[in-house]
Length: 471
Image (cartoon, rainbow, N blue to C red; front, top):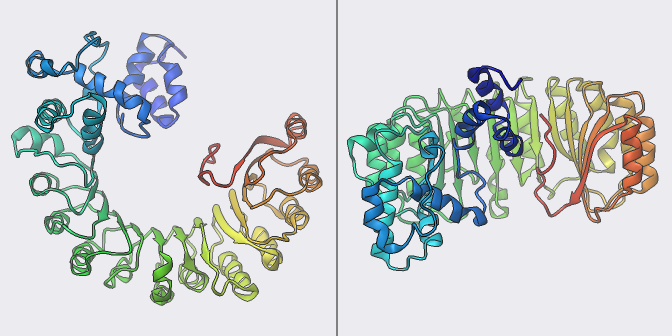
Protein backbone atom coordinates (compact mmCIF):
# COMPACT_ATOMS: atom_id res chain seq x y z
CA UNK A 1 0.00 0.00 0.00
CA UNK A 2 2.96 2.33 0.60
CA UNK A 3 3.56 2.33 -3.19
CA UNK A 4 0.09 3.52 -4.20
CA UNK A 5 -0.26 6.29 -6.75
CA UNK A 6 -0.36 9.76 -5.11
CA UNK A 7 -3.81 10.48 -6.57
CA UNK A 8 -5.18 7.29 -5.05
CA UNK A 9 -3.52 8.09 -1.74
CA UNK A 10 -5.07 11.54 -1.72
CA UNK A 11 -8.55 10.12 -2.25
CA UNK A 12 -8.00 7.66 0.61
CA UNK A 13 -6.64 10.31 2.96
CA UNK A 14 -9.52 12.65 2.12
CA UNK A 15 -11.88 10.05 3.53
CA UNK A 16 -10.11 10.20 6.90
CA UNK A 17 -9.40 13.94 6.93
CA UNK A 18 -11.10 14.36 10.33
CA UNK A 19 -8.97 11.64 11.91
CA UNK A 20 -5.91 13.74 12.67
CA UNK A 21 -4.05 11.07 14.64
CA UNK A 22 -4.15 8.65 11.72
CA UNK A 23 -3.04 11.36 9.30
CA UNK A 24 -0.13 12.29 11.57
CA UNK A 25 1.03 8.67 11.48
CA UNK A 26 0.81 8.72 7.68
CA UNK A 27 3.38 11.52 7.63
CA UNK A 28 6.02 9.07 8.85
CA UNK A 29 5.54 6.26 6.32
CA UNK A 30 7.60 7.63 3.44
CA UNK A 31 8.07 10.78 1.36
CA UNK A 32 5.09 10.28 -1.03
CA UNK A 33 2.75 9.65 1.89
CA UNK A 34 4.07 12.72 3.67
CA UNK A 35 3.70 14.90 0.56
CA UNK A 36 0.12 13.69 0.12
CA UNK A 37 -0.87 14.09 3.76
CA UNK A 38 0.46 17.62 4.38
CA UNK A 39 -2.02 19.40 2.04
CA UNK A 40 -4.93 17.68 3.78
CA UNK A 41 -3.70 18.56 7.28
CA UNK A 42 -3.13 22.16 6.28
CA UNK A 43 -6.42 22.66 4.48
CA UNK A 44 -7.87 24.06 7.72
CA UNK A 45 -5.12 24.65 10.33
CA UNK A 46 -7.51 26.78 12.44
CA UNK A 47 -9.96 23.99 13.21
CA UNK A 48 -10.00 22.95 16.89
CA UNK A 49 -6.83 24.97 17.45
CA UNK A 50 -5.77 24.63 21.06
CA UNK A 51 -4.27 27.56 22.92
CA UNK A 52 -1.00 25.73 23.51
CA UNK A 53 -0.53 25.35 19.74
CA UNK A 54 -1.27 28.96 18.81
CA UNK A 55 2.26 30.18 19.41
CA UNK A 56 3.71 27.42 17.23
CA UNK A 57 1.24 28.20 14.44
CA UNK A 58 2.09 31.90 14.62
CA UNK A 59 5.79 31.07 14.21
CA UNK A 60 5.11 28.81 11.24
CA UNK A 61 3.06 31.56 9.59
CA UNK A 62 5.70 34.22 10.22
CA UNK A 63 8.42 31.91 8.90
CA UNK A 64 6.69 32.06 5.49
CA UNK A 65 7.15 35.82 5.23
CA UNK A 66 9.34 37.19 2.48
CA UNK A 67 12.72 38.77 3.24
CA UNK A 68 11.19 42.21 2.72
CA UNK A 69 8.48 41.49 5.28
CA UNK A 70 11.00 39.94 7.63
CA UNK A 71 13.09 43.09 7.55
CA UNK A 72 10.03 45.22 8.28
CA UNK A 73 9.18 43.38 11.46
CA UNK A 74 12.67 42.35 12.53
CA UNK A 75 12.70 45.06 15.19
CA UNK A 76 9.82 43.33 16.97
CA UNK A 77 12.01 40.25 17.58
CA UNK A 78 9.47 37.78 16.22
CA UNK A 79 12.01 35.65 14.40
CA UNK A 80 14.25 34.85 17.35
CA UNK A 81 15.27 31.17 17.35
CA UNK A 82 12.92 30.43 14.50
CA UNK A 83 14.79 31.09 11.31
CA UNK A 84 14.55 27.58 9.99
CA UNK A 85 13.78 26.76 6.39
CA UNK A 86 10.52 24.85 6.20
CA UNK A 87 10.08 21.58 4.34
CA UNK A 88 6.83 22.74 2.72
CA UNK A 89 5.10 25.94 1.80
CA UNK A 90 2.32 25.06 4.21
CA UNK A 91 0.36 28.27 3.75
CA UNK A 92 -0.41 27.60 0.10
CA UNK A 93 -2.39 24.49 1.09
CA UNK A 94 -4.84 26.51 3.21
CA UNK A 95 -8.40 26.56 1.87
CA UNK A 96 -9.93 27.88 5.10
CA UNK A 97 -9.09 31.35 6.42
CA UNK A 98 -10.08 32.41 9.94
CA UNK A 99 -9.23 36.10 10.24
CA UNK A 100 -10.15 36.33 13.92
CA UNK A 101 -7.69 33.59 14.85
CA UNK A 102 -5.01 35.19 12.69
CA UNK A 103 -5.47 38.45 14.58
CA UNK A 104 -5.62 36.73 17.96
CA UNK A 105 -2.48 34.64 17.63
CA UNK A 106 -0.48 37.65 16.48
CA UNK A 107 -1.61 39.71 19.47
CA UNK A 108 -1.42 36.94 22.08
CA UNK A 109 1.72 35.08 21.07
CA UNK A 110 4.28 37.64 19.97
CA UNK A 111 4.70 39.89 23.02
CA UNK A 112 3.76 43.05 21.12
CA UNK A 113 1.87 45.51 23.26
CA UNK A 114 1.81 48.63 21.08
CA UNK A 115 -1.20 48.80 18.77
CA UNK A 116 0.72 50.31 15.83
CA UNK A 117 3.33 47.56 15.94
CA UNK A 118 0.62 44.94 16.13
CA UNK A 119 -1.04 46.39 13.05
CA UNK A 120 2.26 46.42 11.16
CA UNK A 121 2.88 42.76 11.86
CA UNK A 122 -0.74 41.89 11.15
CA UNK A 123 -0.63 43.68 7.77
CA UNK A 124 2.43 41.72 6.72
CA UNK A 125 0.76 38.46 7.70
CA UNK A 126 -2.44 39.43 5.86
CA UNK A 127 -0.39 40.18 2.75
CA UNK A 128 1.01 36.66 3.05
CA UNK A 129 -2.42 35.10 3.42
CA UNK A 130 -4.30 37.29 0.94
CA UNK A 131 -2.54 37.38 -2.40
CA UNK A 132 -2.97 36.14 -5.95
CA UNK A 133 -1.45 32.74 -5.12
CA UNK A 134 -4.10 31.87 -2.54
CA UNK A 135 -7.59 30.50 -3.15
CA UNK A 136 -9.97 30.01 -0.25
CA UNK A 137 -13.25 28.11 -0.09
CA UNK A 138 -14.12 28.87 3.57
CA UNK A 139 -13.91 32.23 5.33
CA UNK A 140 -14.51 33.00 9.02
CA UNK A 141 -14.85 36.61 10.23
CA UNK A 142 -16.40 37.34 13.59
CA UNK A 143 -16.87 40.56 15.54
CA UNK A 144 -13.29 40.85 16.80
CA UNK A 145 -11.55 41.31 13.46
CA UNK A 146 -11.01 45.04 12.94
CA UNK A 147 -8.25 45.31 10.33
CA UNK A 148 -8.67 46.80 6.88
CA UNK A 149 -8.61 44.58 3.81
CA UNK A 150 -8.32 46.69 0.70
CA UNK A 151 -10.23 45.97 -2.49
CA UNK A 152 -7.22 44.82 -4.48
CA UNK A 153 -7.03 42.41 -7.39
CA UNK A 154 -5.33 39.93 -5.04
CA UNK A 155 -8.16 40.12 -2.51
CA UNK A 156 -10.78 39.61 -5.21
CA UNK A 157 -8.93 36.58 -6.58
CA UNK A 158 -8.43 35.11 -3.09
CA UNK A 159 -12.11 35.19 -2.26
CA UNK A 160 -13.62 34.50 -5.68
CA UNK A 161 -14.25 30.82 -4.90
CA UNK A 162 -15.56 31.18 -1.34
CA UNK A 163 -18.41 28.70 -0.74
CA UNK A 164 -18.77 29.06 3.02
CA UNK A 165 -18.91 32.26 5.06
CA UNK A 166 -19.23 32.49 8.84
CA UNK A 167 -19.40 36.03 10.15
CA UNK A 168 -20.99 38.52 12.50
CA UNK A 169 -23.61 40.93 11.21
CA UNK A 170 -21.29 43.63 12.54
CA UNK A 171 -18.78 42.84 9.80
CA UNK A 172 -16.71 45.83 8.64
CA UNK A 173 -17.83 47.83 5.59
CA UNK A 174 -14.65 47.30 3.61
CA UNK A 175 -14.79 43.51 4.04
CA UNK A 176 -18.47 43.05 3.18
CA UNK A 177 -17.94 45.30 0.14
CA UNK A 178 -15.15 43.03 -1.11
CA UNK A 179 -17.25 39.93 -0.52
CA UNK A 180 -20.36 41.38 -2.17
CA UNK A 181 -18.42 42.29 -5.29
CA UNK A 182 -16.35 39.11 -5.40
CA UNK A 183 -18.39 36.24 -3.91
CA UNK A 184 -21.54 35.37 -5.80
CA UNK A 185 -21.59 31.60 -5.20
CA UNK A 186 -21.80 31.23 -1.41
CA UNK A 187 -23.47 27.91 -0.62
CA UNK A 188 -23.39 27.98 3.18
CA UNK A 189 -23.87 31.10 5.30
CA UNK A 190 -23.57 31.26 9.09
CA UNK A 191 -24.56 34.59 10.65
CA UNK A 192 -24.11 35.68 14.26
CA UNK A 193 -26.66 38.41 14.91
CA UNK A 194 -25.51 41.37 17.02
CA UNK A 195 -27.61 43.52 19.32
CA UNK A 196 -26.18 46.78 17.93
CA UNK A 197 -23.94 48.02 15.11
CA UNK A 198 -25.38 45.62 12.54
CA UNK A 199 -24.14 46.20 9.01
CA UNK A 200 -26.99 46.47 6.50
CA UNK A 201 -24.42 45.66 3.81
CA UNK A 202 -24.89 42.00 4.72
CA UNK A 203 -28.40 42.23 3.24
CA UNK A 204 -27.00 43.29 -0.15
CA UNK A 205 -24.47 40.48 0.11
CA UNK A 206 -27.23 37.92 0.65
CA UNK A 207 -29.28 39.26 -2.25
CA UNK A 208 -26.25 38.97 -4.56
CA UNK A 209 -25.89 35.22 -4.00
CA UNK A 210 -26.94 32.68 -6.65
CA UNK A 211 -26.34 29.30 -4.98
CA UNK A 212 -27.31 29.78 -1.34
CA UNK A 213 -28.77 26.57 0.12
CA UNK A 214 -27.55 26.33 3.75
CA UNK A 215 -28.18 29.12 6.28
CA UNK A 216 -27.71 29.42 10.03
CA UNK A 217 -28.99 32.40 12.07
CA UNK A 218 -27.51 32.50 15.56
CA UNK A 219 -28.60 35.29 17.89
CA UNK A 220 -29.08 36.08 21.56
CA UNK A 221 -32.40 36.88 23.19
CA UNK A 222 -31.90 40.61 22.65
CA UNK A 223 -31.53 41.84 19.08
CA UNK A 224 -32.34 44.63 16.64
CA UNK A 225 -35.84 43.64 15.47
CA UNK A 226 -35.91 45.99 12.48
CA UNK A 227 -32.59 44.74 11.13
CA UNK A 228 -33.52 41.12 11.79
CA UNK A 229 -36.77 41.41 9.83
CA UNK A 230 -34.97 42.94 6.84
CA UNK A 231 -32.38 40.18 7.06
CA UNK A 232 -35.02 37.45 7.04
CA UNK A 233 -36.78 39.02 4.05
CA UNK A 234 -33.52 38.95 2.09
CA UNK A 235 -33.27 35.21 2.81
CA UNK A 236 -36.88 34.58 1.77
CA UNK A 237 -35.82 35.60 -1.74
CA UNK A 238 -33.73 32.41 -1.76
CA UNK A 239 -36.55 30.21 -0.47
CA UNK A 240 -36.59 27.96 -3.53
CA UNK A 241 -32.90 27.02 -3.13
CA UNK A 242 -32.42 26.90 0.66
CA UNK A 243 -32.50 23.29 1.85
CA UNK A 244 -30.73 23.50 5.22
CA UNK A 245 -31.73 26.01 7.88
CA UNK A 246 -30.75 26.63 11.50
CA UNK A 247 -32.34 29.26 13.73
CA UNK A 248 -31.86 29.89 17.45
CA UNK A 249 -34.81 32.20 18.15
CA UNK A 250 -38.35 32.73 16.88
CA UNK A 251 -38.24 34.38 13.44
CA UNK A 252 -39.74 37.81 12.87
CA UNK A 253 -41.33 36.86 9.54
CA UNK A 254 -42.89 33.83 7.85
CA UNK A 255 -39.44 32.73 6.72
CA UNK A 256 -39.88 29.11 7.83
CA UNK A 257 -43.13 28.57 5.93
CA UNK A 258 -41.45 29.89 2.78
CA UNK A 259 -38.78 27.15 2.77
CA UNK A 260 -40.84 24.59 0.88
CA UNK A 261 -37.80 22.53 -0.21
CA UNK A 262 -36.20 22.24 3.22
CA UNK A 263 -34.29 18.99 3.86
CA UNK A 264 -32.73 19.82 7.24
CA UNK A 265 -34.11 22.01 10.02
CA UNK A 266 -32.43 22.83 13.33
CA UNK A 267 -34.45 24.73 15.96
CA UNK A 268 -33.27 26.10 19.29
CA UNK A 269 -35.32 28.21 21.65
CA UNK A 270 -34.52 30.17 24.81
CA UNK A 271 -36.80 29.68 27.80
CA UNK A 272 -38.12 33.23 27.39
CA UNK A 273 -39.47 32.46 23.90
CA UNK A 274 -41.21 29.14 24.45
CA UNK A 275 -44.68 30.62 24.79
CA UNK A 276 -44.41 32.10 21.29
CA UNK A 277 -43.72 28.83 19.46
CA UNK A 278 -47.29 27.89 18.57
CA UNK A 279 -46.57 28.88 14.96
CA UNK A 280 -44.47 25.71 14.59
CA UNK A 281 -47.57 23.53 14.86
CA UNK A 282 -48.87 24.75 11.49
CA UNK A 283 -45.67 24.31 9.49
CA UNK A 284 -45.27 21.61 6.86
CA UNK A 285 -41.99 20.40 5.35
CA UNK A 286 -42.83 17.58 2.92
CA UNK A 287 -39.18 16.90 1.95
CA UNK A 288 -37.61 17.16 5.41
CA UNK A 289 -34.95 14.52 6.07
CA UNK A 290 -33.24 15.79 9.25
CA UNK A 291 -34.85 17.45 12.28
CA UNK A 292 -32.77 18.73 15.21
CA UNK A 293 -34.24 20.59 18.17
CA UNK A 294 -33.33 21.95 21.57
CA UNK A 295 -35.81 23.29 24.12
CA UNK A 296 -38.80 23.03 21.76
CA UNK A 297 -42.24 22.16 23.26
CA UNK A 298 -43.36 18.59 22.74
CA UNK A 299 -46.61 19.66 21.05
CA UNK A 300 -44.72 21.65 18.41
CA UNK A 301 -42.34 18.75 17.74
CA UNK A 302 -45.22 16.31 17.42
CA UNK A 303 -46.94 18.55 14.85
CA UNK A 304 -43.74 19.13 12.90
CA UNK A 305 -43.05 15.41 12.54
CA UNK A 306 -46.67 14.68 11.73
CA UNK A 307 -46.56 17.20 8.86
CA UNK A 308 -43.62 15.54 7.11
CA UNK A 309 -44.09 13.01 4.32
CA UNK A 310 -42.02 10.02 5.41
CA UNK A 311 -38.57 11.22 4.33
CA UNK A 312 -37.15 11.83 7.81
CA UNK A 313 -34.04 9.72 8.39
CA UNK A 314 -32.57 11.60 11.35
CA UNK A 315 -34.28 13.07 14.42
CA UNK A 316 -32.29 14.62 17.26
CA UNK A 317 -34.45 15.93 20.10
CA UNK A 318 -31.84 17.17 22.55
CA UNK A 319 -34.10 18.71 25.18
CA UNK A 320 -37.88 18.96 25.19
CA UNK A 321 -39.78 21.59 27.11
CA UNK A 322 -41.51 19.65 29.90
CA UNK A 323 -44.37 22.07 30.60
CA UNK A 324 -46.75 19.39 29.31
CA UNK A 325 -44.35 16.49 28.83
CA UNK A 326 -46.85 14.18 30.48
CA UNK A 327 -47.66 10.54 29.77
CA UNK A 328 -50.13 11.29 26.95
CA UNK A 329 -47.91 13.74 25.08
CA UNK A 330 -44.86 11.51 25.53
CA UNK A 331 -46.67 8.53 24.02
CA UNK A 332 -48.06 10.64 21.19
CA UNK A 333 -44.62 11.88 20.19
CA UNK A 334 -43.27 8.32 19.99
CA UNK A 335 -46.34 7.22 18.02
CA UNK A 336 -45.95 10.06 15.54
CA UNK A 337 -42.32 9.07 14.96
CA UNK A 338 -43.02 5.41 14.14
CA UNK A 339 -46.15 6.26 12.14
CA UNK A 340 -44.51 8.95 10.00
CA UNK A 341 -40.82 8.02 9.87
CA UNK A 342 -40.52 4.46 8.50
CA UNK A 343 -37.04 5.17 7.08
CA UNK A 344 -35.47 6.74 10.15
CA UNK A 345 -31.82 5.74 10.75
CA UNK A 346 -30.71 8.00 13.62
CA UNK A 347 -32.95 8.81 16.60
CA UNK A 348 -32.17 10.89 19.67
CA UNK A 349 -35.10 10.86 22.06
CA UNK A 350 -36.07 11.56 25.66
CA UNK A 351 -37.76 8.56 27.24
CA UNK A 352 -39.40 7.72 30.58
CA UNK A 353 -41.25 4.73 31.98
CA UNK A 354 -44.60 5.97 30.70
CA UNK A 355 -43.49 5.73 27.09
CA UNK A 356 -41.46 2.55 27.15
CA UNK A 357 -44.17 0.28 25.65
CA UNK A 358 -44.74 2.68 22.76
CA UNK A 359 -40.99 2.73 22.35
CA UNK A 360 -41.01 -1.02 21.76
CA UNK A 361 -43.51 -0.52 18.93
CA UNK A 362 -41.16 2.10 17.49
CA UNK A 363 -38.27 -0.38 17.46
CA UNK A 364 -40.39 -2.97 15.67
CA UNK A 365 -41.75 -0.48 13.13
CA UNK A 366 -38.55 1.40 12.30
CA UNK A 367 -36.53 -1.40 10.73
CA UNK A 368 -33.81 0.85 9.26
CA UNK A 369 -32.77 2.41 12.59
CA UNK A 370 -28.98 2.26 12.99
CA UNK A 371 -28.15 4.61 15.88
CA UNK A 372 -30.25 5.14 19.00
CA UNK A 373 -29.52 7.86 21.54
CA UNK A 374 -31.78 7.82 24.61
CA UNK A 375 -31.94 10.55 27.25
CA UNK A 376 -33.45 9.01 30.38
CA UNK A 377 -35.90 11.38 32.06
CA UNK A 378 -37.08 9.34 35.02
CA UNK A 379 -35.52 8.92 38.46
CA UNK A 380 -37.15 5.50 38.85
CA UNK A 381 -36.44 4.33 35.34
CA UNK A 382 -36.92 0.64 34.59
CA UNK A 383 -33.57 -0.24 33.04
CA UNK A 384 -34.32 -3.96 32.95
CA UNK A 385 -37.39 -3.34 30.83
CA UNK A 386 -35.49 -1.08 28.44
CA UNK A 387 -32.63 -3.55 28.01
CA UNK A 388 -35.07 -6.40 27.50
CA UNK A 389 -36.86 -4.45 24.76
CA UNK A 390 -33.61 -3.43 23.07
CA UNK A 391 -32.28 -6.98 22.93
CA UNK A 392 -35.61 -8.47 21.83
CA UNK A 393 -37.05 -5.90 19.42
CA UNK A 394 -34.08 -4.08 17.84
CA UNK A 395 -33.71 -4.70 14.11
CA UNK A 396 -30.53 -6.34 12.83
CA UNK A 397 -29.26 -2.94 11.65
CA UNK A 398 -29.43 -1.43 15.16
CA UNK A 399 -26.41 -2.06 17.34
CA UNK A 400 -25.12 1.44 18.17
CA UNK A 401 -26.47 2.94 21.39
CA UNK A 402 -25.89 6.07 23.44
CA UNK A 403 -27.50 6.47 26.85
CA UNK A 404 -27.65 9.68 28.88
CA UNK A 405 -28.78 9.44 32.51
CA UNK A 406 -28.15 11.04 35.88
CA UNK A 407 -27.22 7.63 37.27
CA UNK A 408 -25.90 4.32 35.99
CA UNK A 409 -28.01 1.16 35.78
CA UNK A 410 -27.15 -1.57 38.24
CA UNK A 411 -24.50 -4.09 37.27
CA UNK A 412 -27.12 -6.83 37.06
CA UNK A 413 -29.06 -4.79 34.49
CA UNK A 414 -25.98 -4.50 32.29
CA UNK A 415 -25.38 -8.24 32.53
CA UNK A 416 -28.98 -8.89 31.52
CA UNK A 417 -28.57 -6.66 28.48
CA UNK A 418 -25.27 -8.17 27.39
CA UNK A 419 -26.35 -11.78 27.94
CA UNK A 420 -29.55 -11.28 25.93
CA UNK A 421 -27.53 -9.68 23.13
CA UNK A 422 -25.62 -12.88 22.38
CA UNK A 423 -25.78 -13.94 18.76
CA UNK A 424 -26.32 -10.42 17.46
CA UNK A 425 -23.94 -7.92 15.84
CA UNK A 426 -21.43 -6.74 18.49
CA UNK A 427 -22.77 -3.53 20.02
CA UNK A 428 -21.32 -0.05 20.32
CA UNK A 429 -22.37 1.40 23.67
CA UNK A 430 -21.63 4.84 25.04
CA UNK A 431 -22.96 6.10 28.37
CA UNK A 432 -23.09 9.61 29.83
CA UNK A 433 -23.75 9.47 33.55
CA UNK A 434 -22.57 10.17 37.08
CA UNK A 435 -20.79 8.20 38.40
CA UNK A 436 -18.87 6.98 35.39
CA UNK A 437 -17.15 3.95 36.91
CA UNK A 438 -18.20 0.51 35.74
CA UNK A 439 -16.67 -2.94 36.09
CA UNK A 440 -13.97 -2.86 33.39
CA UNK A 441 -13.29 -6.60 33.75
CA UNK A 442 -16.93 -7.33 32.92
CA UNK A 443 -16.74 -5.12 29.83
CA UNK A 444 -13.53 -6.81 28.65
CA UNK A 445 -15.10 -10.25 29.14
CA UNK A 446 -18.07 -9.33 26.96
CA UNK A 447 -15.69 -7.88 24.38
CA UNK A 448 -13.82 -11.17 24.26
CA UNK A 449 -17.14 -12.99 23.78
CA UNK A 450 -17.94 -10.76 20.79
CA UNK A 451 -20.94 -9.11 22.44
CA UNK A 452 -19.41 -5.63 22.81
CA UNK A 453 -17.39 -4.05 20.01
CA UNK A 454 -16.75 -0.73 21.69
CA UNK A 455 -17.70 0.69 25.08
CA UNK A 456 -17.29 4.16 26.55
CA UNK A 457 -18.53 5.73 29.78
CA UNK A 458 -18.02 9.40 30.63
CA UNK A 459 -19.38 12.10 32.90
CA UNK A 460 -22.67 13.61 31.80
CA UNK A 461 -21.23 17.14 31.99
CA UNK A 462 -18.99 16.45 29.02
CA UNK A 463 -20.25 17.16 25.53
CA UNK A 464 -22.90 14.64 24.62
CA UNK A 465 -21.49 14.13 21.14
CA UNK A 466 -18.03 13.14 22.34
CA UNK A 467 -16.83 9.61 21.86
CA UNK A 468 -16.39 7.02 19.19
CA UNK A 469 -17.48 7.45 15.62
CA UNK A 470 -21.02 6.35 14.76
CA UNK A 471 -20.89 6.66 10.99
